[in-house]
Amino acid sequence: MRVRMLVLALLLAAGPAAAGDVMIHVGHNKLDPAKVKIQAGDSVVFHNMDKMPGGHTIVSEDGKLKSPPLAMDGKWSHTFVMPGQYKFHIKEHPDAKATVTVE
Ligand SMILES: [Cu+2]
Image 1 (cartoon, rainbow, N blue to C red):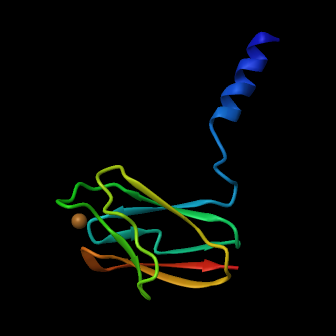
Image 2: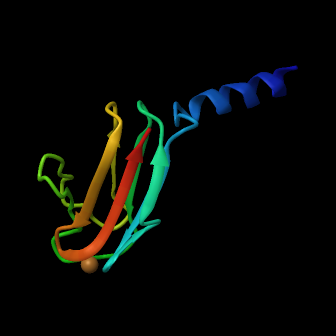
């Protein structure tokens, strides 16, 4: 009984990583996956996997969204409330692009 409650407490402590959230891995010249589809209200987490002097910065094509510079293992999360297509690239690697489709 006591063990079961502990397990439940640990599950709750794992936090509100909502079911619809997706992760995009950030690397040198790479956003992976390059295309993700989510529902309005879901979040996308950009997770930097590579060490880069000055960090990796995620920017939207229209310039409206911008992460802080992400150090190695740094994460940036954005919640998308409006349906649409959002294109991103890595500031330091402009050819590394990703598209977030919000339904
Ligand atoms: Cu890099």
